[in-house]
Length: 310
Ligand code: RRO
Image (cartoon, rainbow, N blue to C red; front, side):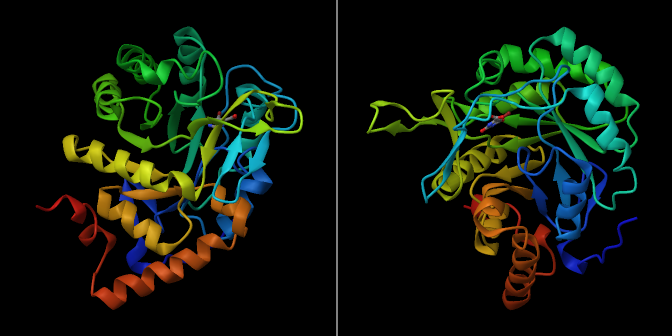
């Protein structure tokens, strides 16, 4: 069993789930095994999102799969995962987790999603599902998140086949109007949104004159995309009254405050762990409390959406 202390006024309740703090592990980092996910919780995360899991296993792309540019990471992992049936063994070990566990999933067809929804409905360890329709460099997935019709239809299919678990839809920034995609997700039955997945990008090896990543295209994450993510959260929450998890370049308490002021209910943290280690969760929590105390805010709710005031 994992014992942890609650942090008082950093608590947030979203979708009837209690998060002891608003700092949640983003999909894709350390989310493939039960021991790693437990370590993230011990390190002070308020919740965790698993690596995206599909119905069938996938090897992912050959190396190199990640390039560190200093101001951000470009990854082209290619959705490596053991498939849902194998991953259930990891989830079995996570039943006693003291923070919400969000299962990230993807599907190449609505039939696959139907099957997955029925299986996931029975999984006690799963508090919510994050539907990934937004990986920028895996064909068959990236197209879903750019089409309002497909997003609505995929979300509805999941909704119809998933009982008793909220659905979060992770959106791509690689569209001209993210609000219309957000609206489609909500119309399909999404209970919350995550903004944003990585920004489609590439890196060239000037020695060979070829793309550096084996998958050619990749997704940019980290500090470079924070202003884009903030803009997306702001645009969505300006129009829609739906909980939005901010994701993209969160490294400090200042970043968290910016996302909450833009309208996010909580944030997800990924690349910062690669850059600073798992201590980011505790360090940001301490900084965050200090900020709230200093400014006289009694809770994060008082900060949320401040940037929308006119
Ligand atoms: O596995 C990946 O290559 C990957 C995924 Br599923 C995603 O959603 N976003 C990303 O940047 N990489």
